Amino acid sequence: MEAALACSLPCPPSPSLVNRLPDGFNHLAAGRCARRTKVASVGRQRVLPATCLFHGPCDSGDIRIFVVSDLHTDYGENMEWVKCLPTVWHKGDVLIVSGDVAETISNFELTMLQLKKRFGSIFYVPGNHDLWCRREGGKFTDSLEKLSELLETCNELGVQTAPKSMGSVGIIPLFSWYHKSFDREKDITSVQIPSLEMACKDFHACRWPSQLSSDDVALAHFFDTMNEKNLELVQEMQKSCSQLITFSHFVPRQDLCPEKRMLFYPNLPKIIGSDFLEARIRSIHVENKNKSGCHIFGHTHFCWDAVHDGIRYVQAPLAYPKERKRRMNGGEDWLPFCIYHKGLTDRLSPSYWSDYYSINKRDPDNTDLAPWVSRFYRSRTGPFS
Ligand SMILES: [Fe+2]
Image (cartoon, rainbow, N blue to C red; front, side):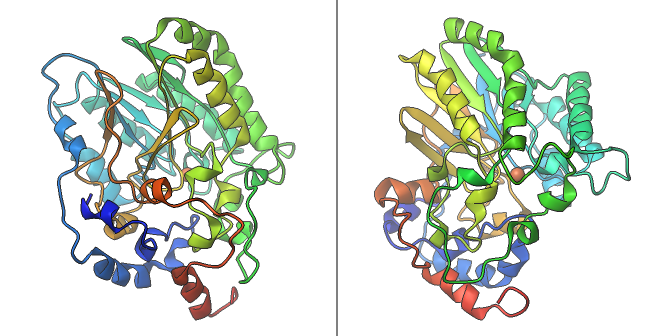
């Protein structure tokens, strides 16, 4: 990451950092964003992030907890990144993987085997890509069957998918799925935005039983209910642990995503988050009034580190190779991010959008497109224009 980034705020955000589009939609902006990155990066000083301090063996024997999301190891570069992680530094450490490991179960297993060789303990919750069925050769009737197989694979590999205490820290995976009504902010209507079904591959690559529709809250509610079986474990941890860390793949609050006018796909908030999730996070952390709550998430591929209503929310995604090339700091040398060592660590710094919103007030009623979004839609040709 680059130190001068924070100094550039509250200037308009770099368009190169606003290009997170849903799956299958990224290609529409990739070329022009790559060119802009060079311009946006001029004059910014590269520094080693503080998290590098934790990238080495832990001599003291204290527990360290690292986090990463969106490994997407179906991309060869990402699988290589996993294989290049040090084999001896993290033997006593915990790694939290917040979903979207791989599209195929074979790549998922290969990835987890690699991580198991490197980390003492691994925690995981499934993301949307993990439940895609399109490249499984008809092995699964639907995404629920694949979910069962994923959880069974984790069980066989010794990957934790249920709450567990690690020393005095309670780590709590939370199952979740998104629902459209999570988005409460004013829609952008000045340009023609592709439908969710066109923009998001989940609608084609996942298969659900007929009673679990993506059109309402049924899927989000179903996944949230999966957490009920762990209530007693969580209650035990609330009493006995000095620190609780919850984690999910999806986004619990809309203010953990940039405003719609900043996004090349302004309807992104309709396919990222769950109100059930935030309610569950609050119910877990509020019991620990005198302790600091922390929640890890993924999915949008925006690095994020911010405190809202007393809970710290962190996203540390590996993301797609082409997205890393557009970042201020690619992620190769600061991920996984150390979130806990003798207490919660300093914030992930700098995180472009959470830094931006620490200075600039969110104004969701403003639907004037950011200049880079406006240019993008003006320049588009084809079926969406
Ligand atoms: Fe995702």
